[in-house]
Length: 198
Image 1 (cartoon, rainbow, N blue to C red):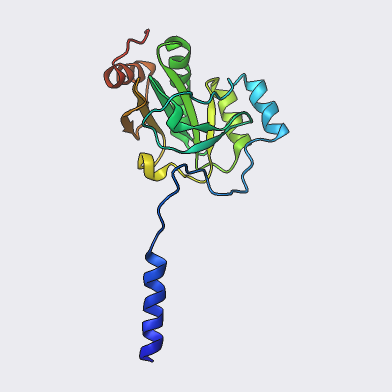
Image 2: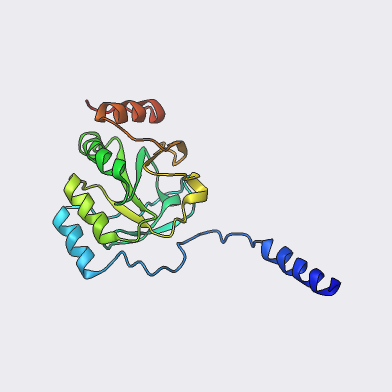
């Protein structure tokens, strides 16, 4: 009996050990395909801009995410700012309400501040692209269906916003509902120290 108990304890101790994460994490193999001909068509119809891999080193996590609706995968650590990341999902009601404000920022701030959306913990990419089209979003979109970003941004719910400064450093992460363009504009100006048109 004692040997059996010791064997069980040994197995539990070994199970609790974790190996170090590889330097460049990618989402675990998933059954969610975010790049199909149908999704590419939805993305094109919505006028969503292509994903653009970064070309320099910043301080974002070294995580590579697929482009929602097709396109090149993006290593977040290669992105620099000023950049505003909108964490959303099609199942998140408040996300739907605030996405037009991110689109307005994308349209008005243009060259000063970029906007990037990440469809987080969402297993229905077609519905996500329907949401994007219905809210008028055209900024580039990545997909994280398996939630690989949870530990990096300490994600505890949606919607979320991540502010990345010009050096690629995360200046702020908030989980809140943005209720107006003016509120988002003020947040961007305060955290990223850039001027954004009214």
